[in-house]
Image (cartoon, rainbow, N blue to C red):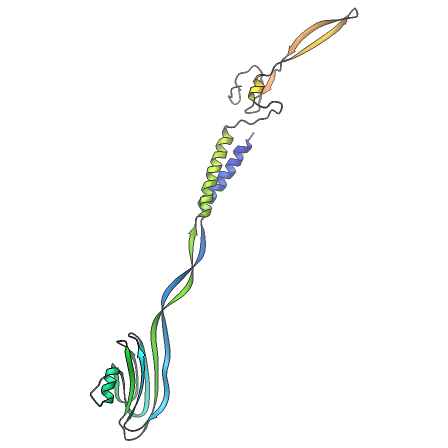
Length: 249
């Protein structure tokens, strides 16, 4: 006969082992990531005309590392520069000047120019012809910025594993207690001490002789068999040890 407490302990122990071994979960959480974003914007896009011996200039404050993409075309030769504020001052003062990029006496040009330092930079177009010249100019600014975005990450959650370990300890305790505890199958007696003090019940029988009742026999009826409190087997009442499980009576 299986002991209920022992069986419960085995079940609890099994559940605890499964949780401890396989209870790890991957839990999502929100994290933030910094990344480099490429940005661009068209800062000049025009079709215009420059008078003879005149110039056009566009300027703006740029940061080092930014890039300018120049797309230029004209019906006659023109000169175009990209230069900083000092070089532009020389240009307007009719001094010798240079830029970080230049295309002289061209009808078309295309280039990508990297800004070397934080400064004001000018896109200058010079018409040295004796007549007006129509042109098209497009300047696109490119820059890199650090942006932050939300991303979903996963991390392990060991809560169920710890719960499983606690359940394992509880299962071990229940299993051990269930293995050593004797089941009580005798409903008439509360414990072994009461069973050991059981006394035989005297039985008195009488018979009539010449109208008188005489005591014929007084005998004691002693139980010939008892039930082992450990394995519930029927054994001889005079036996000291259970022949089936070896328990002392």
